[in-house]
Image (tube, rainbow, N blue to C red; front, top):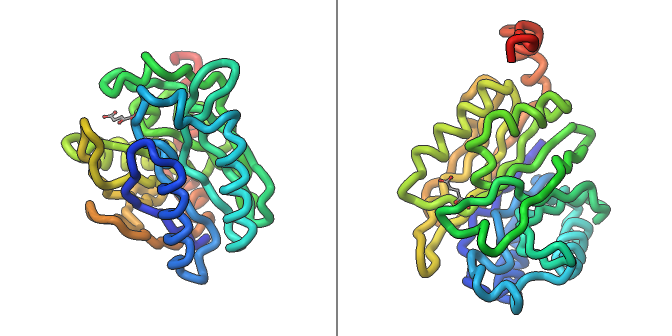
Length: 257
Ligand SMILES: O=C(O)CCC(=O)C(=O)O
């Protein structure tokens, strides 16, 4: 698989402007890329106080936009996440599409991050929302979700071999971001493909360092803290190889935990 992670800045509360930025990035994609990943809440950023005005009604506009991009560029697209409004309230929701534009799955962030007051404005997702991308069982995780190893393990026990993480992770804790992601890859013996944003909003500076990590914990590719497209190639056979070498899934003591 040839991945392209779009590590972009996000305009605060300006979905149309952010869509134009994404269009520009797509025009610059490496022609060999088959799977593209976007960051968290790319439509609005953390403009939570104005969700009434800026969130996407039922995620329809975002889904159309993402489906059309995937089809036009013939790429699988893990569409970061968007602020979505529905009868249930506002959610932080990821959509994945295949290269024909077909929707593969949907996932809403289940762990809301109090430090950014998400719990005051958003409602939690209730489902795992796994998807199969390129014939590979995969899962989406949104930012703070990576601090919950039991949540990540649940996806892997379901069969996930690639974890797509999308984030607006602040710069002051970028060491946590890297360490947690490397640990999630090693302990689950799977690929971690993680796309963060850069730039600033009124309250935070975001740290970039989008990263692709293999099931042995080796870094396949890593960005710095500037806007860029991070390209990486991964080989899924390595998942099986690593799981045979250290068979942690056979050695688990399920009765004890
Ligand atoms: O856990 C962290 O330190 C960052 C989480 C975060 O920024 C988020 O979930 O939006």
